[in-house]
Structure formats: structure tokens, C-alpha cells
Image (cartoon, rainbow, N blue to C red; front, side, top):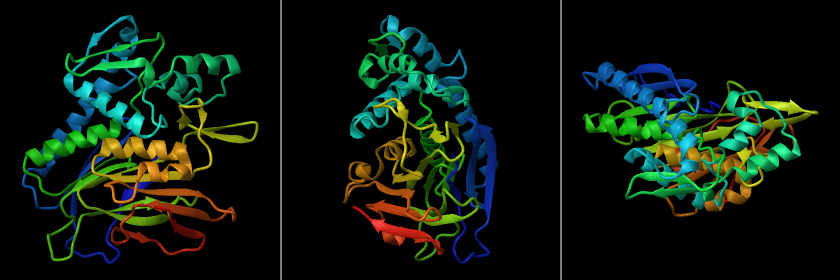
Length: 346
């Protein structure tokens, strides 16, 4: 779900021109945004960055049988399988996030995604037997990672890794690494607008100017921005089920599953996390959507380097309640409008 979009300053300045290089990838649009005229070979670098995204998608998608991830899913239950070093690092990072979130983020829940029909975006409610079987074949507890030998195995048949909740962010981190190594000092990259990472400054470096401004969209009002967040060498991830859902017997069921119960998470409209790495922001926003208000302190504890914005329904159906945690008030501007209640929780 695309809940964020690059935002102009509240008082647009004529010098804030950008050069955008974009391409469809990972079922969304990826864009690399440079300050116009700042990087001489920006177009070439942008295209190289998008080529990198394509190569990452080729390797970690579950929609291509030849991908490294698909091959791992097909063979890892038979014993240890060699895995490329960067993918081992990604899976290790995913395990750390799984533990940090108390299991609310679980990249080994592919069998559950398949059971609910979300793998092909054809939602359905599984019967009790199908759901029980999928839960038996789900969970990072059944994935063993040998970092030193670069290998992975599953301890139970039927386990499926699905990196959809972290893959876009991982690609953005790789792109930022490539661009900064090439000498780019300021750039914003995003995948589908819901995964964003920025470094440097939007526009010329002037006294008082910081970071890149990104809009957070209102989950109930298309076209309306809820807030504008300034990313200062940081990433932002937003999770929500506004576009991927189905209705079963009058009940709206979104595509974000609670891997602990095996059923779609409910009670949250959208969850946004701001943290240094885009892969972390993506995974943690998914986990926060699952955990709801009770997860704010776990995801974004006071004094840490992670902030969160959680949007939940208000008593008035036309309104929303916004809960924040560890959010720097100097880096966020709430858009005016009725039906918005902002509460600082942590």
C-alpha cells in the first residue's frame, strides 16, 4: 500500500527542483530522486540503481521459480543449502527483527500467505483444517541459519520464506549504499512510496535546512496528506491494508497477517516507522500494524533511534486517532483538518 509520497516544503521555493529516474519493480514504482544539477551523471546513476533493484528482485522474489529464494524454499527442508552471503545477512537481520517484535514480523509465514490467497492477490478464507496445516508449516523457529558457513536449512517440511515485508527496504538500502559510494551526498529513493530512504538535504544546503520532506497519506481520505515528515539520513516505512483486502460475509480482511495467530491483523488503519535502515523500517511497520497500540513501546522505545506513527479508528467514523512514539516534534508537521486527534504515547 502506498501511504507516503515525497512532499514539497510547506512554502515551496523555486530552487527545489529535482531529477527523478523511475521504473516499475517489485509490483510497484521505484524512483531515485536527485537534486537537479547537483550530480553530473545522475541519470546514469539512477538507471544503475534501478538495475540493482531489478537484480535483487530476481534473487529474492517468490514469484520466479529460478530465484535464489524460491530454490531455497524448494530444497532447504532436505538439509543445509548454500546461500549467498548478502542473503544470509538479510535472513539474519530478519531473524533479529522477528525476535525484537515478539514474532509479529515473521518472514517464514509464506504458507499462511498462500493459505489466505494473498500470494496471488486472490483473498479467501481458509477452512479450519487448511489454516491449522499452514500454521504447522510456518515460523522462523523452523529456520536455521549458519552465518559462518553461509548456509540455511528448514527443520520442518513446507516452510516458505516470503520477504515481501522487508525486501523493498533491503533493496533501498542497497541502492543508497551504491549511490553514496559513488559520491552522491543527497538523494531520496522510494519503492511504491510506502518504503522510503533519504540521505543529505533536499535542495541547496542552506542554514536551517535539513533532510528530505515526505508526506504521510491519510488512510481514509484519498488525496489528503495526514502529515509531513522530514527524513534526516533516515528511512520510513508504512504498512496498511487499504488496497489489498477482501470482504468475507461483510467483514473486511486485509493482507497483513498476524503470524502468531495465522489470521489477518485488525484494529489499525496504518502504521509508519522511521528508523535509519529501510529494511528495518519496512519490517517494523508491518509488526506495528500487527501489534497495534500495545506495540508502540516495543517498536519505538523512548530515547532510541526509531520513531512511530500509528493511525487507528476514532469513535467518530469520519475521524482517526494518531498515536506517536519517540517522534521528534521538530521533524513532523501535522496537516490541518477536522477529525485528527494526535496523542503522544511514548
